[in-house]
Image (cartoon, rainbow, N blue to C red; front, side, top):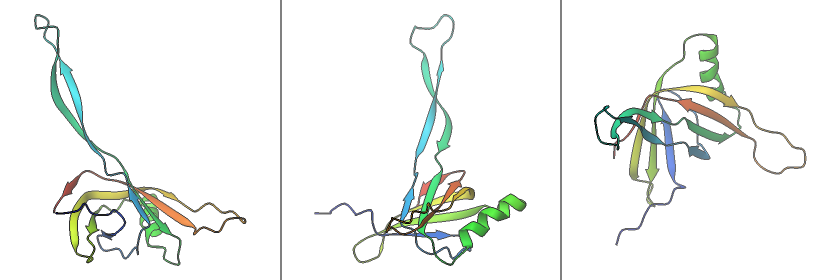
Length: 140
């Protein structure tokens, strides 16, 4: 009997960037808009047709360390043209082998969030990067 995979073992690869590990990856959503059409002499129920495909932004979160790789990626877009990259997110099984993998194409950072600070807290400082993209596909 095959058991479903846990969601806590994964790796994220960003074209040409050594961004380290991520504590959370979210926003894997794909939807298709529904267009309704009805002719004047047609039946009362409109036809439903597929419209635009929409992909939600992906949010990457990681503990703040010395690396400035993610911040530098977004500031490149602030100072000039955005750098579009391919992101691969791979779910790993118990033996750390790939169980499923998604590719996100033409991805670029559209929002960087620095950590919140609290002198009474004992949590890790988390930075996040919100990624816009033009499509994702499951490759395995």
